[in-house]
Amino acid sequence: MIEAINRTGALLVFPIQNRKEPKSLWSKLFPRSQMRWEWDDDGDNRVARLWHLREELSRSGQVVYSKWYRGRATFFSKAVFTNLLAVLGKRKGLSKGSLSVLETLEEESPLSTKSLKQKVKLQGRAFEGTYLQCLKPLWTRGLIVGYGEIDEGAFPSLAMGATQLIFEDLWNRSQKISESRALETLQESLEGNPLVFSEILKQSKFLGENKLKLKQKRVILGKDLYLD
Image (tube, rainbow, N blue to C red):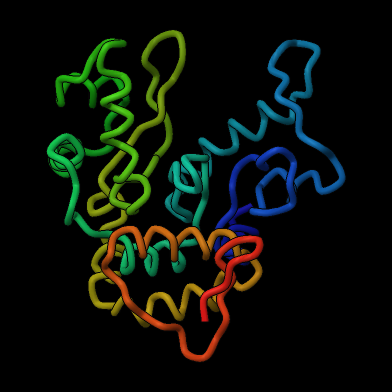
């Protein structure tokens, strides 16, 4: 699966409503099977097996795991993620809450969900929405990653860490790449994964950081929208 992620550049873990795009680990492993969310004893155990594989891959250090594409579990090749960081990995415009989470993880990584909530004082159901809102831009910008799981009792939780600590080499490399060059490289690397590339462009535009016009190329942004 690591080879598939590296070859494709990015793969969701599970497909979105069994669509072919964006590509997923499920579609690579079971190309002729639709996925159904079945977790009971009589269900399709391939879903649970793939969920466990997700955990193993996330702590392998050979690929990068994030809750990235529209908040869904996503794996990136190291090369693609490095260029993504060059485009999106900015602290500018983060809320105080997001900065607090990021700075906490920059002091100690990885942390479990429970430990992170305790450290940033966002425990309990009343703060769940605030906590998730703090995490969202950190995932989107590649500033945090998932790295295995930590047993917290009944269910293990995703271990999260600051990218700058977990993948220090990728972070340092990304700081030396211009945004324009990174986007050109991403366009080439994700040629077969246009929806992922269009999402990167969307987030880049949202940040207002990049005004690059890709050289005489029409880049797909969605089903019917193009950028010249």
